[in-house]
Each structure stands twice: as structure tokens, then as C-alpha cells.
Length: 492
Image 1 (cartoon, rainbow, N blue to C red):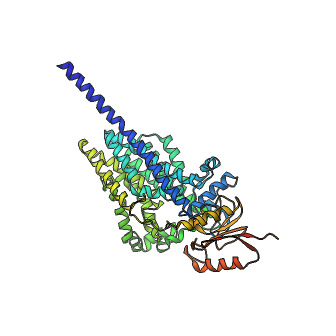
Image 2 (cartoon, one colour):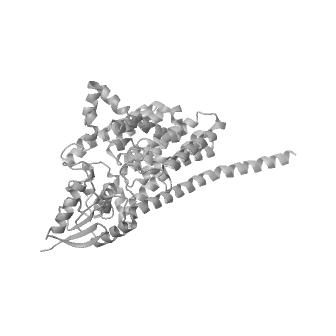
Image 3 (cartoon, rainbow, N blue to C red):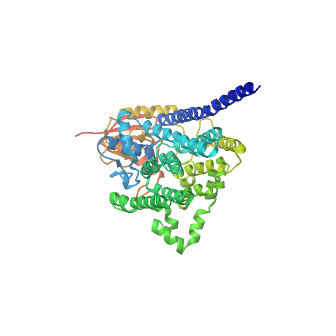
């Protein structure tokens, strides 16, 4: 009888082990399915001219320029040639140049962004495995990370270098949790290279490491390096390459308009700060972020607080897009809410961890079904995303794009620009600059911000520009269909 019981116990153990080992395979399968599904959606948008010069085309031009020996050179909205760090300090784009030489297509950038975000599921799995004592609970949290709707939205929003910080922060948390400081340092360098403000959550992460793990010296070193990086970017690098302060300070005009101005406002007009951070949009933003995770991170708020610098920046901004969770401004938020939720599960009784992880997964999936960005979901596209064009107009744009020679200096409208930014000079209509070709979509009246206008729809500028091009002897019309025009410069 004891022999039979031993055999039964052995078979049960083998069966349990097999089930446990199957969960990582489930996570990997979900990662691949998530990546391919999202990439197919982005690819369809790209082919149907729903992605734009701003922002995908900007990144394409920076990567193309780097691959062609002019590191991070871009054509600014004003028509000037600048190094990209004159606006955003995200030199991580340089690492994509070798890949561009292998696969020279804007979809490369989308694939990298989506694949990187998917890989963030692995450190979530590893954290869960270490702290939860259950492979199933760990895997369910990794799946909940993939189901988190705002991750899919920001991965879908091609392309923003700062989005790469999402998985990198998760690897950084896992590295610190394991006291792997060399691995953390590599992650930290890449995180800093993804954006000038990423030094702030890095600094907060260093404070967390000190207080939660007792590593005072290392934690303070991380915090100091993070703050130093952001200050270096804002006060040295951007002004040196631009000749003036960051063009994005005006987004904080109501609370001081600069880092020093914000600090001054804290002391001279604190109610302005409170008002900026407690608007209806700010409060609903926090609710949308927390709902898919069932607010679980509140049980271990220490790590969740690392998201506070990014939340404060987003809340203080006068630009409503920063408090829309469908955009990349949540890059310094998602990783810490997710990782904190994993650690929070460890506070629950062991028997309840799998159930709680399942609840988080169901809540994330439910919201993802409601808000997208997956095909068939009812969620509306946020500002900055573009509506589907009729097939005839898409065909006209494809034909027009094929008319423009590779590498030729070009002036173009916004949506066509995503397909034509892999060149040295690419201007936004109505700027001509050195352009030898003009591609103008009369349906696409969006223009970037300049000294004389705000970004947005400007049909009052597009129509006169088109009429001047049609009447000018300097330009020859080589294509016209469904409101799409291509002009070539007449050579004398």
C-alpha cells in the first residue's frame, strides 16, 4: 500500500510540475500572439496612411540620417536642419541605425517598439516567480501586463523612443530586486537614452532601492545620477543644440513654464499647482490607470510611488494629451504600477494569490475589449490618431508616393510624410526650403506648430499654397488624383 501511495504521490508531483512548466510557454505564446496581432494592426494603419510624419516620420528621418553618417539629423517643423537632441534627448535611436541598414522601412521602428513592449512580460513573470511562490500566479500577472490596455495603446502609437523605457524599467526593477547592479546599470543607461525626463523615475527608483532594500549608497547614487541626467538634458544639451531653452516648456505655462518656474510657483502660488493636479482629467486619468490592475498596487505603495515624477509632469502640463493614458506619456508609470501589483500579491495568503492574479487579468482584458486598440473594439482613437481614408484616396496617395524619387528633397503633407521621411530634407507644407518635389494631399490640412501657428488643422494655409504651386512656372504638376497632387521643380 505504501508503494502504491508513493507511486501516486510521484505521478501527482510529475503532473503538477508539468502544469507549472507549461505556464511560461503560455506567456511566450501570448507574447508572440500579442506582438503579431498588434504589428498587423499597425502595418494596416501604415499602409492606409493613418500614421504620420509627426511622429513616425521624425523618428524615421533621425534613424535614416544616423545610418547615412549624420547622427540624429532631422528637418525641424520650422524647416531647419537640427540634431534631434535639440528637442528631445533620446539617443537610443542611434541603436536602430544598424537594423535600418538591414530592413529600411518605417515598419521596422513599429516592430521594435511592439517587440520590446512584449518582452516586458518576462521580468513580470520572473518577479512573480520569486515573490509569489506560484508559477501560475506569476504567469497570470505577466498575461495581465500584456492585457493592460494602455500598454497596447502606447505600443500601437508608432513610434516614440520613450516607450522603450516601459520594458527597460521592468528589467531594471527585477535587477534591483535581485541585487544585480551591473544588469541594472545597463538598463539605466538605455532608459536614460530614451528620453530627457526618464532620469526622474530613475531617481525615484534609486530612493525605493535605498528604503526598501537598505542599499543607501547605491540607491543615492542612482537617484543622483537620474536627477543629473535630466538636468544635463534640459539645461545643457537641448540649449546647446537648439540655441535656446526647450520648446516644450510652454506646455507648463500655467505653473511656471520651466523647472525653475515650477519650483517658484510651488512657493508663491501653491494653489495653481493644486489646481493643475486635481482637474477632472487628472483624476479620471488616475482612475483609468488603476482600474485594470484592480488598484492592487496600493497594497505596496512604495514601488508604485516611483511613478509619481511622471504623474506630476503629466498632471502639471497644460496639454491634455499628457493625461490621456493611450499615449506614450505613461512610459514612466506603467512599469511601476505593474511591478508593484506583483509585489502586492505576495501580501495576500498563498491560497488567494492565483485568484487575485486572475481577477487582475480579467479586469485588464475587459477594459482592453472595451477601449482597444484591437480591431473590432469600440474604443475611439485619441487625438493624434487619424481616421480611415476611403480606398480610392489611399490608392491615390500610394500612386503619388511612387512618383517621388528616393532621397529627393521634398515638401509634403503630414500623412504622406510617414512614407517619405527617409531622406535628408523633408519639409512640412507650406514650407518649401530646398524641396525639389511637393506632395500635397488636399484632404490633409494638419500642420505642426510654428512661431506663427499652433499645431492642428489649417485649411486656410493649405489652399493658398496649392493654388500658388499650380500657378507657379517653377513647379510642374506631374500627378493629380482624388485631391492628391505631386509637383516637380522645373529645372532651368
